[in-house]
Image 1 (cartoon, rainbow, N blue to C red):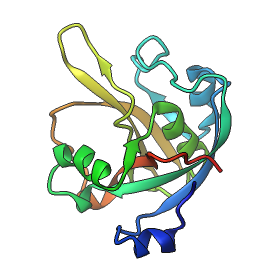
Image 2: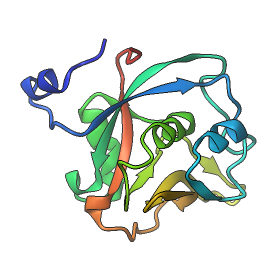
Image 3: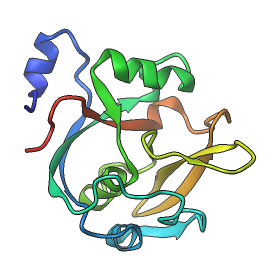
Length: 167
């Protein structure tokens, strides 16, 4: 079930920017990264071994909602805010599908996936994010617990509905 933006408002939930993107999980991670044509730099640790695709072999359209960092007091509050809105953080394949489908919309923005987490043997945890500058983007890792240096208005956390959100 897809909830429209107007219905979302009727339910008393904030009207965040929403995008419908095709997610083709038949592609492996390297193919998915390559599909984001504006992606110039990729952290070498962003490989399938560290970030396995969660929806392998499925395809469909997904509604992705962008939660701005400015909607919460702190980065650590984002998961609770998503939960209150009945949302899940996106996985890396959804993050990349958003970057592929809407590369120009997010100039000067950071889109961080909290659904895909890589934990090193020393316990450090990292989240992938797309960082857009002009017509190009970078795919980097954010270390859990580190301060986000981008202005809150430019940092977003893509999420999907906990309900079936395929179009």
